[in-house]
Image (tube, rainbow, N blue to C red):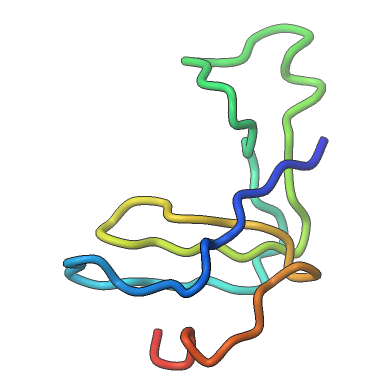
Length: 80
């Protein structure tokens, strides 16, 4: 299963303390957009993941994420 949240471009920092961009993550786990408190039993067999991922944090919260194949190459991330 593969789900992604793409950055609405252009991205600008909100009144953030700091924005953090993490790239080339081997595997980003539990990326299901449905809110569940926990998984148990057979649900554990199909944990949604994204291999070779990126993650953008803004104001200490997840802003967006996705696969490196679909990473929006743009100058707006040069200073993160």
